[in-house]
Length: 183
Ligand code: FES
Image (cartoon, rainbow, N blue to C red; front, top):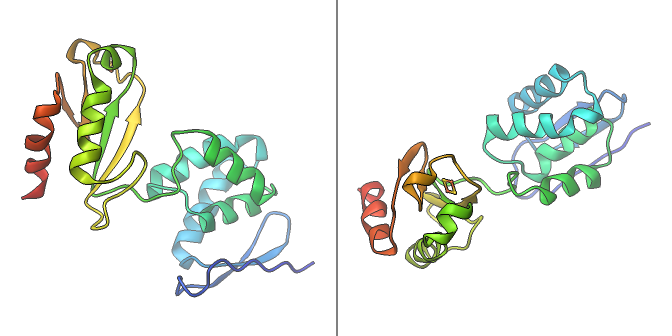
């Protein structure tokens, strides 16, 4: 059986044929190397549909995000409906379909940080960068996300920029944090 999927072909230059574990051939708009990498990840979990969450985690860890084309390849390998994969990706807040910025900002909104004003800090980042949570600035430099407790409650409210941890952040301190990365 031949089944063809073609997503926004005008946006993507690459078109590759993929044959999934089910023997069905589809066309996906991704570079070959990327498809092979996703296939490897799926194979490392035996193409087991019950391992979907782990496969998604590993794939997001590798590519940074899970766009629709990547979900297609995963669905295909694990012989799951694309809609099911999409449902899982959109259900869990730790999965994202949007590429993170060069400097991903994560504001902890766990209880300790929340009671010490994380919401106001988050508002300030939103205002300064003019984006919402889950978005990336048009120049691709910054993105904002929320995290649950990162285990540094003594430093609440806590903000991470990439791997760097900032403690006791106040709304007034947001500008100077951003300055560090604007140079
Ligand atoms: S609640 Fe933010 S570090 Fe624990």
